Length: 387
View 1 (cartoon, helix red, strand yellow):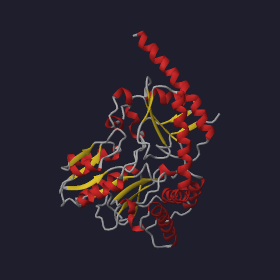
View 2: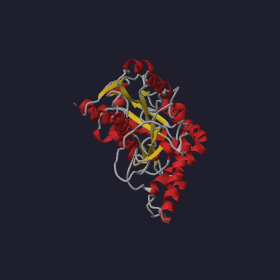
View 3: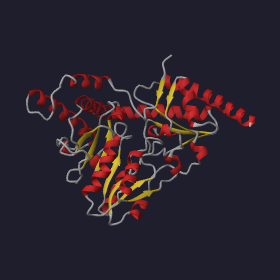
View 4: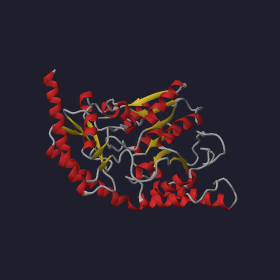
């Protein structure tokens, strides 16, 4: 029997169209910076991908720069925007639930002299525009708040938050890695100055991502060298990965409404089935404004690590909080910021569906998960009695 993958929030498989685009790109070995025929052909492939990515988020070609991953895009956004606009001040504002690629670079900037302000979230993981307004000062250079949280699924009111930041003259960056390809994301309509996205989140290849920087916004390069990517990110372009990202973006733009509806239906079936078959559980994140493919649940009486490993043995691959934190085996900073206790956070499980997920997959998962939970709870109970 085939395994059931329910960890699309951490990475997605490549679509057949994406694989073909990458295979075609492997035949173009020229350097995109060269002016001979092979170089021009490679450059054309890069620019085709740029058009595809720009179309997905309603940006211009000049506003899209390719990077290697979402972490690089986030690092570049915070460091580059702060450095290029340091005359205004040295304050950076972020939320308590940001991805480590935002929170840790902010910590590094703090050690280099920046003033970091962290905003709280409510019990659903939502940042309040009023809290942002209260934290802003004339010294605020950059505000960075994610568009959607890939762990608990909550979508933030980015358009309103960006407008509040602009009232004080601050720039606004959003980490949209978890959202692009699952939601209709319009960088222009959101009013953001910078936006990060990554191909592995929408059925593109690992090793490909991008940073949107609004035309006219000053940002310093992250890498110095040959002046590729509008001078912002030097280095010979990884053409196969970029071509794959472009194709994934084109497919996402075409399929987005139907994709979101299908994933939302499967996610809701999974939620309702778990509610019927497993007691003492809690669903986390906002249900009025949520990623369509994400389900986050805390199950009482089991540990997250034991649950993920036991499900894996049963043929179900699920997520352990943030994939970037899984090695640390510590309670999620997102859940703690939302007010959950350490005991509640320890039973967290992220179940995310994807384009390949079938109704049969969901039904099989609903048969296996309650059995695994019951077995783990029995072990926990026996262990506690033996002490």
